[in-house]
Length: 241
Image (cartoon, rainbow, N blue to C red):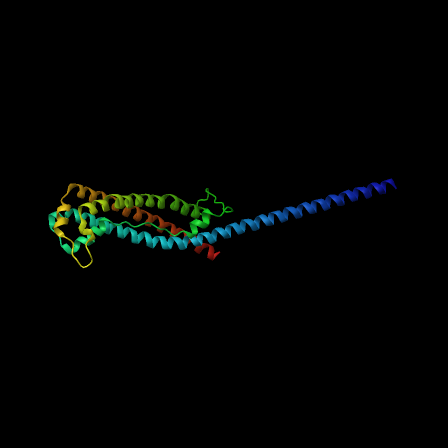
């Protein structure tokens, strides 16, 4: 009788232990399944973000290319102003060259992907990734936070130079800037101003800023283009899997 009870108790304990193991296994499977789903959702979110980055970079690439060409043209305009006293000039061209002298163009990159990247508290990027989606997103983040900021800093310098230095100088020394529509500029006034050493130094400074910005845009255009290629290859690989 006692032997039967002992076997019965042992059987009950084994049954309880087995039930406990099954429950723990079920919890672990459920936990692992939830973790897998969360990781998959995070990866899918990163792929969506990478697609947005691709679209933004496409727009940025065109803007960078256009800006590089524009600043090269502005630089050439400054260089031409320095040669005017030697070569002579046409009165009709004065307006164009002075426009170059007082022009600047703010850089406005696409914002959607970067806003989504920086405002998502649940998004974590693996900085050790060397060729996957985290690597590509991190590379984009560096471009935005460092390369684009460098352009913005130089554009602020150029903008302040135009607004605080070149425009006040022209307003004081070349009032023909405000000639009414339909009237030609006074070429003789410009000829006098263009021989002023201070004016020449201003033009040289302006040419330098335009040249630096053109170089920054050219560099950014190449780097953005390279990242676009990497993203395209990665997304094409995913579509084949």
